[in-house]
Length: 274
Ligand code: KIV
Image 1 (cartoon, protein in one colour):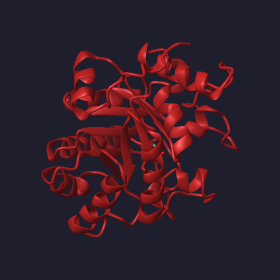
Image 2: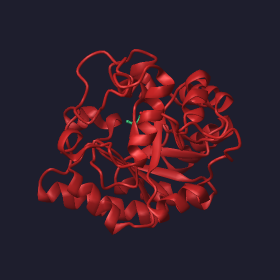
Image 3: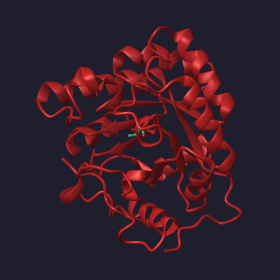
Image 4: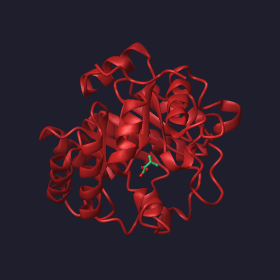
């Protein structure tokens, strides 16, 4: 499997990601939380690294992402930034670090950007549009996150598929439009029917939608690194493919992931979608 980046790969910029999207080249994203895996994922050719607040469960051992603090995210973003050379780094704004006010969101985003993030991600629907606008106007690229938003797990009643009925699908489309209009450059679409994710992408062609359990019709894909390496304990959702089973090493598994997203063989609509 040879998708390893050339030693000469230039740092991935927002401009480069937009070019890929315009050409129809799929964008790859994986989570990483430390320098070692950031380096490995970057060298295996992943376009974007998400320092996700999923680290609350995978690194810190919590049962949800709710307890993760902005200080935790700053620490792990610094670690990733030290290991990474060329991938685009996205820092996740954790629960409670942006909900209070636009100013609070700006302070938290500045902390992540100064730790080495190139973009921040925040969860939530139309109510976050004003914040997205406030941040983008101040030079901070924003990735929105719609569908299953894990920080709201207690309000959503569990890790459930979102937008299954017509009303739910319309609400997701409405929120996506508001976030796109507010300036979100990227949008994670988590756990929703493929048809809904496809509509969101079609409604907002300039936005790079990144799916996780959202089918094949998005501009790119993201998985949690521990899940695709199958080191996460417990039952994994059906949208996860075990790339470690196919490769002889972690590096090879990550390269296979990159190749499968780029050539459109992952996700498989018949196996990994809803
Ligand atoms: O925190 C995270 O890892 C995420 C992904 C599931 C998209 O938000």
